[in-house]
Length: 72
Image 1 (cartoon, rainbow, N blue to C red):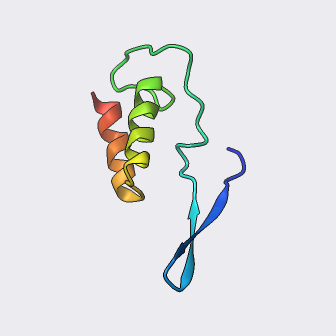
Image 2 (image 1 turned 45 degrees about the vertical axis):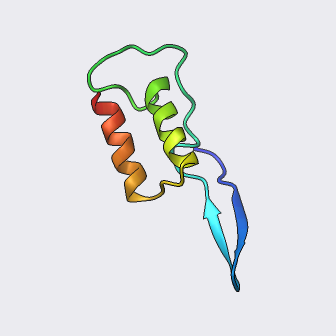
């Protein structure tokens, strides 16, 4: 998929390592095909996941956002 970027965030005493999600490595398709369920590389699906990441959602919660975005 590609190299993951690791950054450190100073929180209190110990630095916390944050890696990019597996969805950050996906490149969207040129056009949405509107099939049900939407494909994993659909621009709409990746946009919703990216917005959730910016709002601080991580881990299993991000997986749920991905599944919900594909369902609609």
